[in-house]
Each structure stands twice: as structure tokens, then as C-alpha cells.
Image 1 (cartoon, helix red, strand yellow):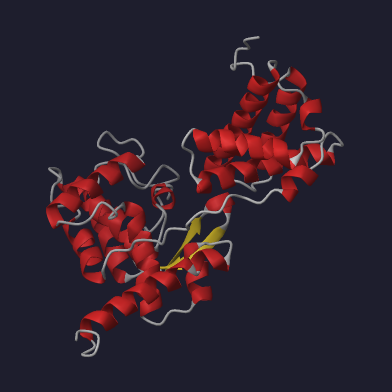
Image 2 (image 1 turned 90 degrees about the vertical axis):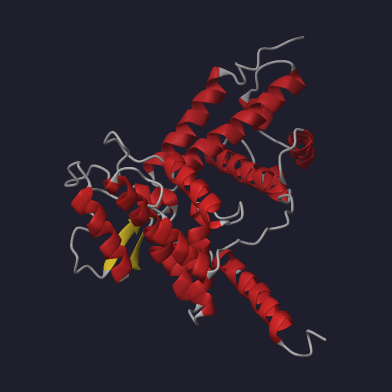
Length: 315
């Protein structure tokens, strides 16, 4: 029996799924990106069930899922080339949906809770060296034809490195942000709407002030601070493209991305004596274990210095 996978669940199940997503959005417990990922992950599981059963998935199918059912789904995704990190996130989204159904008395999370998330290698962040990070911020406007666009590129990349912002956080700043040249910190809305205060370096304020002075668009109010060439919100793809050009200009590796500037911020602070808890707060990490990845990066750097500099290591 062939079933269209466009219809991957019966109406009652799809209604519960929509209700779950609405509750997550209303509670501010998940960012729009997380919501989109969770929706996609649960949809993929329901498509798997639909294909397996030869009919649209039902609420009853989720009432008592076994670990074997979920392992079969993960194995199916693995055969499609999906990595362990994505599989783990997909399992987290499915568990969240099952918890929602369990509160309504419609499912059990026992099977999903008994299943361990796939292990992944946990690749280390790849920061730039201090010299390369400074070169990026200094040369960021070198290839722009418009002076205001040149200043914009410098301001955005200086924010990423100087404040450790995610690109979405920098591009989400409103027009009235960083307008006061005497400001000492900025409030940043991170993942899940969680707000944190990040100190401002004079270099960051100067770069943004230069951009404000040259930008031809009105930067007051709640409209985006950073604009595209036609005045609309600056898109992340534009910043990524400019960073790719800088890689060619400066001879940097492919790992030199806008997000690598955030990694550089954290790694360079740690190398200068910053403590993990403070860096965790500055980055907006929910878990200290996420921040601890930078200690491994710093250990790798220290070993490289040792092997290159110690007389015994060079013999």
C-alpha cells in the first residue's frame, strides 16, 4: 500500500502537534530556530511511522513507544547520512512532544527516556588567532564599494569578536541599540529569549558610531540596526559572504566563519585568565559544560606552544 507522505498524521495527532508548538512559543522556552527544528524532527518521525505502518500516524502509535521503535527510526535516519549531533537533537524534540502528550494522558515517555542519545565526537570550536581576529575586524570593509557598507561590515564583525555575539544576536539589535557612546554594556536577547548583559569595548562603540554616522537609513526606534544595501534587515548570508571574501584576502582557513569570531572571543578571554563562569555568562550558555569546550581548545593551544618552544620538545 502506497501512502502519500504529505499526510503524515491523522488530524487529531497533527492538532496535538500544533498545540505543543504553540505552547512552546507562548512560554518563550524555545527560540524560533529551535521551534522550527523541533517541528521538522517530529514531522520526520511521523513520516517514518507513516511509511512503516502504511497509513498516516495515529495518536495510538505514540501511546506506548518502545526503545526498539525509536532505534529503528534513528537507524533509518543514520542510513540517510544524518550525523549523531542532529540525531540527538531530533530525539530531544521528539521527547519534548511526548512529554506534552504524556501530560494530556495520551502517551508515555518511558521508551524515549530509556534510549540514549547517539554519541558524537564533539568537535572542538575552531577560533582564529588573536592576530587573525584583529585582522578580520580591521580589514572587514576593504572590499565594499560604499563607505557606509564598509563601516557596517566592520561594525558587525567587531561586535561578533568584541562581544562574543551570535550572528543572529548582532543582526537582531534594534536601531536604538548602541546609540549612547558612553554605554558600558548592552543587553542581548539570546536563545530562548534569555537576556544577558555584555560589556562594551571602546573599539566596538567606535565601529558602530562610525557606521551610524555613514548609514543613509533611519536607525532610530525598533527597526534593525544593521541594514542591507536597500535598507532592509541585513541577512546573515551577506555577513557570511563577506567573511568568505576576507578569508581569501587574508589567507585564512575555511573554519574562519562569523561564528568563529565568537569562539575567538571566548578562547582569547580564557587564555588571558578569564574564569569559566564569567565566560559562560558572557556567551549566554545555559550549561557550563558547553563553555568547558574552550578549555580543551586552550589546552591544545598550550601544547602546540610547548612543542614549538621548549628546547627538549624540539630535539
